[in-house]
Amino acid sequence: MAVDHRQQRLEQVRSALSVLVYPIQYAVNLPVDLARWTSETLRSRAQLEQENTTLRAQMQALLAQHQRLAALEAENIRLRELLDSTFRLGDQYLVAELLAVDLDPYRHQVLIDKGALAGVYLGQSVVDAMGVSGQIVHAGPLSATVMLITDPAHAIPVQVNRNGLRAIAMGTGSIDQLNIPFLPNNADIRADDLLVSSGLGGRFPRGYPVARVSEVQVVPGEPFATVIAKPVADLDRSREVLLIWRAEEARDAPAAGNAAAGPGANQPAAEATVQ
Amino acid sequence: MSGPRAQGRLVIALSIIVALMLTVVPLPGWAQPLRPEWSALVIIYWCMALPHRVGVGIAWVVGLLLDVLTGTLLGQHALGLALIAYLTVLLHQRIRVFPVRQQALTVLVLLLLYQLVILWAMGVTGRAPRDWTYWGASLTGTLLWPWVFITLRHLRRRHRVA
Image (cartoon, rainbow over all chains, first blue to last red; front, top):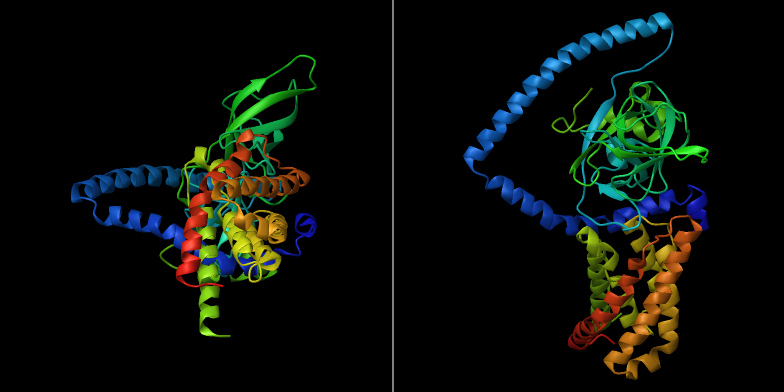
């Protein structure tokens, strides 16, 4: 136990054993999968048509935004080149599905159906459609465990989107709260500020939304303000998550160990959306 | 190995697998802390009924699988299960002759001990749960013991596992 807690040595044992227990997890997930499949297959034509229209409208809107984004991105890179700083864009994604399996109720972890065979590696960042949801803590060959940002043992470096103030967002153990400690009473942070990942520490890519500040309490006499934020990702509702390979990792893939076989080599064409 | 023995092994293995599956079946949030420790119950039963076949070793392996399954510290469930397996094997002759209700009380003590060991492991690594509901799992486990006992005894007699 102590060895597992202090070192990473047993990670291989764990990943080998995870293959052994995967059938159990798969079997538990099966009825949920089946139910979803049935409800999708038996859906009425009208419903499908309606969904199709909304999706089409949404896509139009997103495409319009994207046009502007491309121009902005190019401009941003140009300006940054002028400033001589590096800011890499163009991460690669792989969609993974959550398995409907309950893990330890006292940790915030979820299981996904992609593992080291799909290029998933330890410490990889995981996001969903809304924002950062967590990072990989165990990667077995067929499945991987994601620690959510609200796990009490998790912390993520963030910065306030409005003014670039850097901070750390720590998990609290409740699914809709993050704690931002060690901000002085006069720090420029208010309710409704968006916190984005700052990329410090090198684990999470920068610029992904993490949380929105919900409460700032300044208690006179206390050295630090009490700041509470609410994660923007749908941590307890989303069925799918995106695994991120950062641009530099994707480019010099062989250097990144496990990720080597990752995005380029074996992304199933249907599932993978590149860039 | 002869036929019946192999069959017995199959029955034991299947019961353990079902217990592991029940451990990860999704439950609504409020019920999660109350989820009984299925694998502990099954291990207690087999250690009590067939101490010469199921003992500390098997309990430890099941515990390791449980750790990997639920993503906890490798060894925390293993330690707990091995401990209660040892105690059950030690006391199996006494527990066996108890009426079911009295057995359930013994099981309550064993389950509480099991949870205490796990709580200690979680506490040492700095993630101890603060709710009192944590101990609810032992209570539901105790309430379910008669059914687990009767089901497994039926299975054991039917398939003549000895």
